[in-house]
Image 1: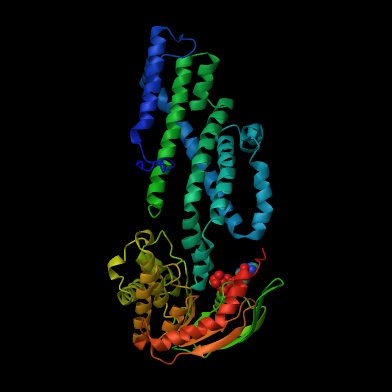
Image 2: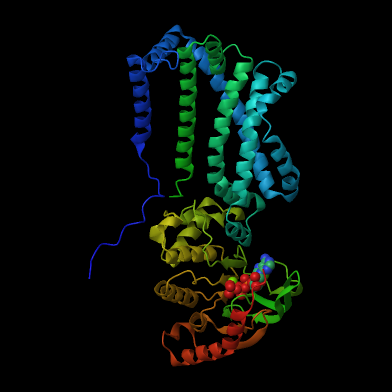
Length: 262
Length: 255
Ligand SMILES: Nc1ncnc2c1ncn2[C@@H]1O[C@H](COP(=O)(O)OP(=O)(O)OP(=O)(O)O)[C@@H](O)[C@H]1O
Ligand SMILES: [Mg+2]
């Protein structure tokens, strides 16, 4: 009789935290670009040299213009997405709780969701003025719809037996919403926030490209029109970093609020 | 406070689940309800607790609940229904927070029920850290905290392994012996029914009707694992149910 160990086939499908892999991927890609441009394998018209991009960034910092561009952008993102997300969460919860609100608003949200919001910028300029108002409105609307969809989906998924339990103990309606529905929907709401905020960043840049003196979008647009690839990349990298930071912040919030999960 | 069911009939659309159930649930006693699966036991319990309206007939409260009772009709669910984001203490606090009690009163009640269910050491644990038996003890503690007049228990031990079930049955017996409570206890486990029930109501297959009510007079604390008298009762129950269960099992599911 032959004897051999049973083959292991239970691996995979269980992602675990591997902290440094992400960083290594970045470092390798940047190193390849640096080596490629230095050796002439990649022409400087194709891709700017990473070290030049870094130098451009340092210059920008030294000139003091970095924060002139960064601060307005961060403010727009913060104000616009705070408005959109808080309105979206409220509407999402209402849709999740009331049949009439659901019947009335889900089609409306479905109709608004696929509109490229940037197409509405001229309208917003007329409504809210060329200044900050139209940018806030654009970002708010852009983050609103995905937040609504994520929130009512999350509310729908709250364990009904927990709600029944609350009712059977005579909890008030408000208590059931506050202590059972909202905490139960939190995981879904937070993962929706990741998408909403990424959309917020995209719209931020779009709005700034269409009419802003300062801001990351304006900086990128100016660099692009001059074919100044180093500055273009500085702008793009700032956006990526912004995205990573936002995602990390949500990760921290998730860790704190969802400690009960695993 | 007693409960009287008078001519309860319940239908989901045209699908009759319970037919003409009349039953008295005396206070201070455990009334078990057994019956083949799908005969409407859980539905009956939801009707008694006011989570659903009967199609016909009434559920009546006879007399007033005791004055310190916060939630007269209190459920214990098969799947525990604990909030995963609240600790043991927080889960019990949840059902006390809406009653205008002071913080100190709430803490005193929690400490008392945790001591009675031997959970004091686990007050700050989250549900995910607890075994199934522990979770059900938390649910029992939560139910005791509101000083119910009637406990409505829907297969409270079914999700547990047989050893844990045995331990929890002993816990329930000792809780009842110290302070007799009123309970309607739904189960499909006949051994549980004869260990815990003062009266055992046997339902027919759907539409559920009362087939027979078996009374057991032996005090709960004297009932033991392999008691011939209980075994005889259990055999009797099984004979009542066998044909019904077989027929219920062979029925097509309407979906
Ligand atoms: N909300 C509902 N809508 C429609 N039909 C339902 C509903 N709830 C229960 N039923 C049906 O009523 C019948 C009785 O259900 P119930 O859950 O009361 O049975 P049960 O005796 O508790 O069964 P089990 O032993 O499986 O727990 C089942 O056939 C079920 O499909
Ligand atoms: Mg049931």
